[in-house]
Length: 228
Length: 280
Image (cartoon, rainbow over all chains, first blue to last red; front, side, top):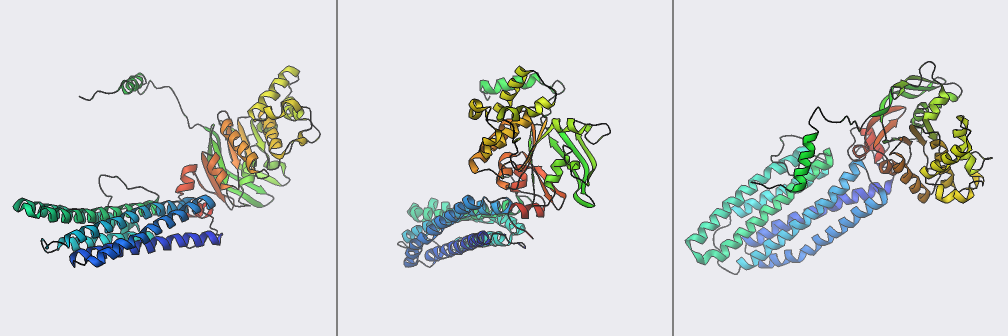
């Protein structure tokens, strides 16, 4: 923003909000990456560490909420600032939910690590990489106010949905072939579903960024617009 | 088959009655004041530059902008108060219900009756009682019948939400009232002559928050009958009370739109900077 607020304290608090959201985003991205590693590398200790670290994500959620409410109450923001702060409120909710999904992945990893591995994990890490990239790019779009990048994130969601469908079909075929695999196959299916949900949350963030920058909502449309 | 609720069916029947073409003529967004290419000068300096704007009937239009942007000058052009200042002049048109207020043969006094004004500092006539203050404009318009004047005073004070507070003290001096009450007395005085438009030039800037809230509540009530144009430095006030907002900067109208739009997603960069508290 070329012009700064006349009120320097307000300016600082808005900057702090931006920094806090980025810190929380980085934290959540790392949580997912490590959660998936704990599954792929069968590292139960790592899974426990990640579950423990979710407190930090929750703490950030509460802290950012408080900051947003304080900014709304004390500065009666308007225009772009209003959209920035309300977007901040919504982004943290999505990030917090992503954090919870990372915990869910770790819980399934702890269970799956107790049994022999059903199959080599190939699509799950691919999905995880795309979902992580979507979070990273949605937050980059947020910082740079880049609606093109945000739109790309919305479009990338399809990739993750397709992989989820593929994993679903694969796990079903395992279960049909051998009912002894049902327990493990279902848990792998759950992990895939969690990653699919994570990508949905990243899409929510990207949609909010478009609202923040352009003041236009593209949520709940049948098709993603080609440009904004 | 879907069975629709009786209410839906009833609405459909109602809709059938008003087929296109049979619809009653309702134009909720009529224009009361149309300002075209308005320029206002003080001697040689241009205070308002080429402003064109429509003020909607029975809506509140807020004029915002930093000091010296021409907001007060602009509204003073709407009831021919600007020309009262020596060396001041106006170019362009101001049409009230289609009639040019600056046309030949238009009586400025009659214009000011139809377009009333309330100022920043409450200015009740210092030597007059509350009653006489409220009656002053009405009497000046030639009304002499005591009963009619009494009715008018009561009605105006009620409209200005002041009646209950002063009904027992009508003969006390107007200046004995609190600041907020004095401002409402000035509003009552303006309302007594049945204006079509009420101009308010920062009506709350000398008032405390409670008196301000009362005036804002009053604005909401008055707009049922009267078109209001309010100049304010308080952007939250503009956001709270107005339906439309015009942003002025350096004598020019930068942006005009619904208040919702101006305060959430303004089109112009200068508007955005102003409402968010950034100054370049």
